[in-house]
Amino acid sequence: MTGTVYKSTGSWYTVKSDAGDFMECRMKGKFRMKGIKSTNPISVGDIVDYEIDETSDARTGTIYKIHERKNYIVRKSVNLSKQMHIIAANIDQVFLLVTINNPPTTTSFIDRFLVTAEAYKIETVLVFNKIDTLDETSLDEQLYLQHIYQEIGYKCLRVSSTEGKGVDQLKKMMVGKVSMFSGHSGVGKSTLVNALEPSLHLKTKNISEQSKQGQHTTTFAEMYDLSFDAKIIDTPGIKGFGIVDMEKEEISGYFPEFFKLQDQCKFNNCLHKEEPNCAIKKALEEDKIAWSRYRSYLQILEGDDEHYRTDIYNDDRIASDESRKN
Image 1 (cartoon, rainbow, N blue to C red):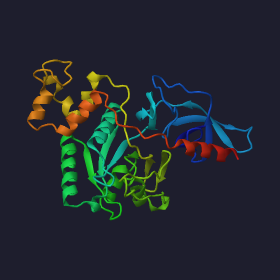
Image 2: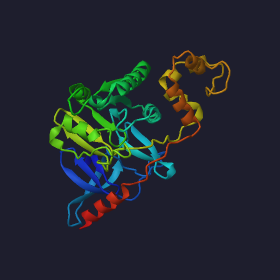
Image 3: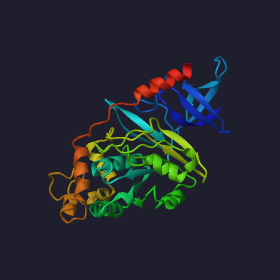
Image 4: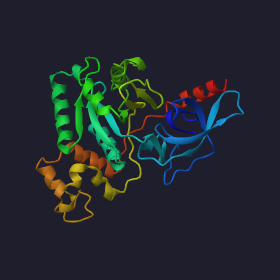
């Protein structure tokens, strides 16, 4: 049988068959994906072949093949710098939720995410969420950020889940597609999904006033079928976004505004740092490239990774596996 992985909890996978039936499946042996060192060989969005296990009391399945992926998006695995964690596969577009101050989303985080999405050829839309909470200063900051990314060519949306602003526009962009929602914990992913599809009743939590950080409500990536002919992959909130396996010479190619200019540099292997006659540095001095983008580029180039959140989901995985055995 063939189906799509709708949920992964580490050891068990919820697979929806082509006929529309859901089944809990395990993985058969170890999968080795070509050229991928991953902590999770099967991810949400994967198309898999599986067989029904008739020997167990509960009706479960065994996955024995993963179909070739159209694409996937990854980040560096927690505490395993040589390995990657596949967030989701076979995605049509990603909506990256950005909040200005509750919690703050840094340009460094946005740029790392966009670089990875560019590398894996996945269209990303920036969703500036919670616009109803912005005061005059933070509104200026939000509009300035939006201007930076729109000038580069990224689509941007301004949304308020609680007031319904921008929700219908977002819906239209999702019809007929598999969309992934991502961002820090607390940026309002679950609240926004509930605004799009109230019948889902996803859990939501408030921002911690002390730390201004979000509290995790989604512990595993999960796909949902929506009533308006759309699929959504809701992902756990992520703090750091580690870049995986990029050569220094190729990083600038994933900054679209750098890519347009880099053939004008004197040296074809220019890293846009101290080299003379660098078109990127010239554009920077002329305010044609945002300084925040250049800082993000240098951080990635120099391997200055943000701290990754410790793997707080491990206890959830163990509890989930134990409950299925009982």
